[in-house]
Length: 44
Image (spheres, helix red, strand yellow):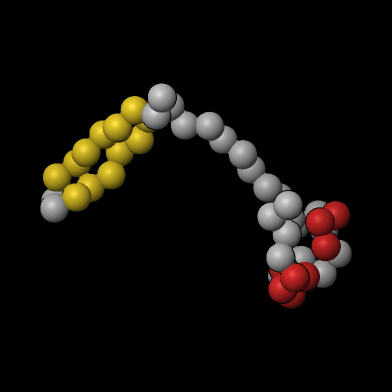
């Protein structure tokens, strides 16, 4: 689903290339900086 036509430039064997890896993670919360101040948020 995420494979793009030009990806074979980096992974010649396609989706079965041993150097190709897709990771999936689910976050519960996060943190970022805005105007030099850290802001936290919860993902519900």
